[in-house]
Length: 310
Image 1 (cartoon, one colour):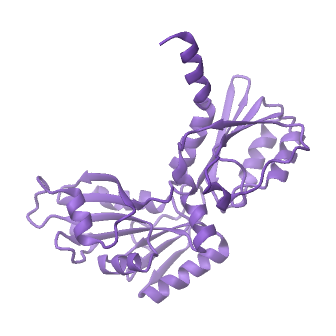
Image 2 (cartoon, one colour):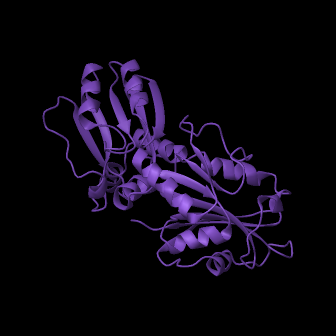
Image 3 (cartoon, helix red, strand yellow):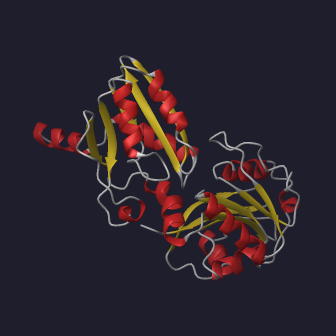
């Protein structure tokens, strides 16, 4: 490979600071994270939150970094993240004259934000192609703005034959509660079918330091009311811990976007079990979905699959 080709490839890659901001956003919330890095000399500061929460933490970071060389955002400004005009005013007030953002040219982005930056600013705005890196952080906002409900992650447990299983069935797998807690900690709200709101996997605060409301539901009608309320709040992600039967019924109603499924292998052995066969055997309508992760547990398997939006 010659030097000209090397330079062309380097130019096509987003700056490391922008990539780090996108990674931080994903780690904050898989489907609604937003993050920023601010470079001031040899110092780099960062922060993150979730789309739908107030953007005051970003403005506080900008104010503290007065005179910094540049700010890198994990996504372009949009309604559920930060107001463009307020952002540019904050940068100018802090004497920060360079802003780096991903360049998103796909049609789906217009559903989230169809505006272009105003020309009347002294801040240099640099857009970087990111080749669909981190697109999952827009799943929540896109779903909220196109379906008037949050992106829903359903968490459920069942036997190999598809019948529901209590979380106690995995009590020997000490990491299951922690894993569920990690999943729900990256969403804005939590719904729990039947069980108590103070279940061991329910956190007091989520990764963005918000206090997620916890709803106890007993029916699909209860859950639909929760979705309507979260839409009114304009909060774009929600976790539901429920029975396999409820998750299946909600999938048939197009109200589930991602499933984290813990499957108990009846023999106690997970060797030789096809993850794809398990998931497709238990859940309907998986055309247009994709497997996004799987792992072997002591008494079964964990499978994660999601709707493909873009």
